[in-house]
Amino acid sequence: INIMGEELKLKDEGEVLVIAAEGALQKKLYQTRLKKYGIKCVNPDEEDFIDIRYFIECVKRNELNEDLVHQFGNFLDKFGKRNVVLVCTEFPVLVEYIDKCQKTESTVNLRKQYCFYDPLQMTIKWLKEIYNSKREVEDEQIYFSIRFGFNGNQTGNIAYYFKKARNI
Picture 1: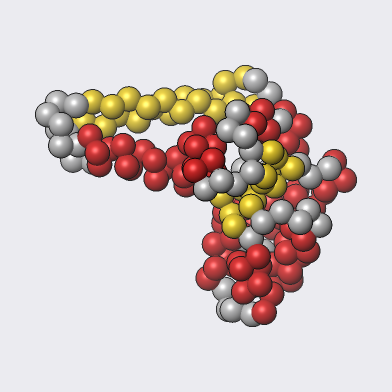
Picture 2: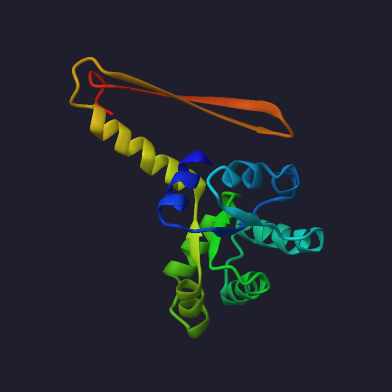
């Protein structure tokens, strides 16, 4: 979230729509963290959770089609925000489908109208930049720990070790 916050701040983006599953939205983790960067987060209301769950389930079942794209566009239009943070991993898959599917007026307008931010992709990009800037330093080791959890309980710990001796 901090990596995304830094980038949004550099781009002078003051407000974003956050779309995620109910738990992530109710916890307000993104709102709290992005506020530190001067970024206001707009959250869908509880009645929007049904639509969000529908989009997530369609991606999981690989039921991606033009009608779903149209519904997703209508959903985003309700909020009137150009910048959209895709918290759930299913939403970047839906956006990728929009990018790759046959170009129609609906898909072209959707991509022109919205700027999507994927926190996971931004983190990967940041890690690659750090790795590439450090890999020429002899015996340099970089350690990253990404912790993730639900309702405050840590459910996993992913550690990334990059070392010049390893051909990563």
